[in-house]
Image 1 (cartoon, rainbow, N blue to C red):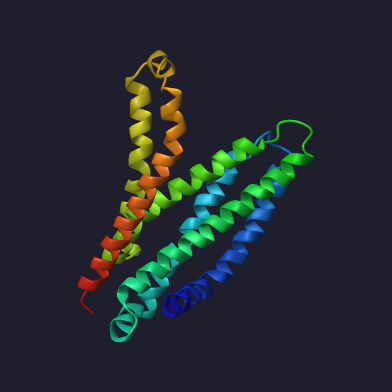
Image 2: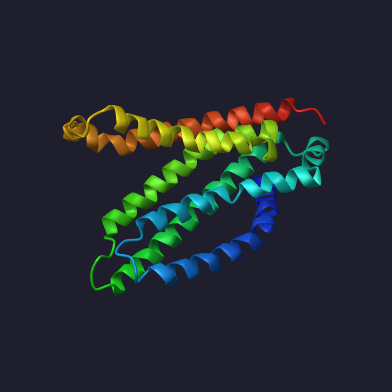
Length: 219
């Protein structure tokens, strides 16, 4: 466990400067839009996913520094290195999402009308975390396999395919069909737990794939 926290500290040192710039950017954006927009759930969701994806820069830094060769020659296991990257992403991303959500709720309390409610903000936060974990599960093995630079087109495809699928579904199905789709209350109540379980399984599979990919790389 000591090695994992050491690797987390290494990645955090790489991210710290950019995190400070992100905080300044976040403050400016919130200051500009907080009193000119009725709701800011879109910005909250955007920043939540953005904080998660900040760790992708660590892959680029590792490539530039040849960290893979150093890791292969070190006594630290590859699995611990992979776990450290996933754990850092989860901790920083979740912490950033909570901070952004709290900032939005604080600003909403000062708005006379149009502010986001606690329930809406929490739903947006958990949805954003879920989307970020899904993206992490898909993209991290690709980063380990091909590197960040070679994976840029894949990143666009991963983001564009779900959006295109939803848009195509809305185009093909009449609005009346979509509006008449109803699920039993029991199914809706179980959905968050089922989604969380699926995400946990996806992350576990992603960690396993990333570990296998990194073990098979030749330096």
